Length: 576
View (cartoon, rainbow, N blue to C red):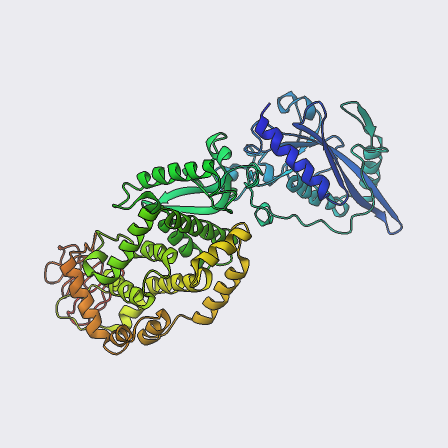
């Protein structure tokens, strides 16, 4: 019998007693805590003057690896189920469920042999984030539909069978007339709303239900194109290292684990937390294929912060509190690292200052991801001039993402503005996070996070309000407006807003001088056209009327295809 499963079920029973579900009762068997008996009161309106309440008795069987595997449930009182599949339990289902009516329920995934479409489907079936309460609420909702699906005669028959059943549980022999566990059989007026596990105000692991006071909590981490990312769900050290948990409550996979910074008592004041943080950072830095010359904390934490900023900024996840809380935790850990380790802080400050003062230090070889550098800078507010940092960031980021104009083509500011919308939007959002979440006093921000166990909802509200005010229905509509929104220096704003074409041309020239790779399909088109319709790109194919460029197809006089912009009449295609 699994100790972890029993510990989890004990917690769930305690919570069920503290927050009971109306018209539902449940209790673990004294002889076997992996078996629970439950009752659900079901109102059945026979006619306008007769309302019967049937006590529906069921058994819940948990597996030894619960909550990794779903429980199974069977009704000892059978009833006409017309909304899906059902079966009668056999010895294969276990002695407790033999003869019971087992109902097909999506969250249990117990009829996978019948529903082939469930196989491998994310967001469907059982999740370790579910609980006994989740199951009981789903079963209650199912039973409350009986009143509308049964005939008056079927309702009377079901009521009589529910009242006359006999069942044994431990030393208790009980019946529908005197159900155990005791059941309030008053008519339920409405379903109790289930509180999602993630919304619980206490920081805890969704899998084991262990809180930050009981275990070291952290986040699952996965890699995408060599960059560490997280889904933002808290997971205990034991769930990952001892129970082998490798997926979120929504069945999203992850491969690594990193301690969360909940508060000083959970984190910095715990030698165990510090040791696990050091080991996890070293492992994650190694998994990236090398730290790029940075110490593990500077190689990993800024990358995770940057990925959380991007996730929060996505339209479908802007309200995802989990991502914001993960961002806060990663930032708090980074702030702790650079505050308590003088050598690490010196490395971080040197990196940011060099980026500001030396163009050579901004090269991709030194700073592979400028977004990560901005994340690092958020932990060092006060150590550098923010306007100068923004100037340097804009200077380098546009060398990397500006249109790859070919030869003597005239720069088109409007086209470049449209093409760089995503990167510009992310940078504006990063700056808004810096202003609204971190502020000008990182130490005070850290104290606020510590006081709320890593939750600062008022700052999330301020962030969302500021972003809405900044963008409105659309982001800044011109280069000048964008420059103003970034808070750059007047000199940089002049270059971006008043002399945009010259600035773009300079960025293109500098990119070539820096030797930045254009990647597959980004090279200059090779041959001049003559009749065909081949793709220009990479250095090769013929275009049908001019030089191909980027991914664009040279077309008899139209625009380059793919992501390219083209010139009419034998012009040249270009690409971001």
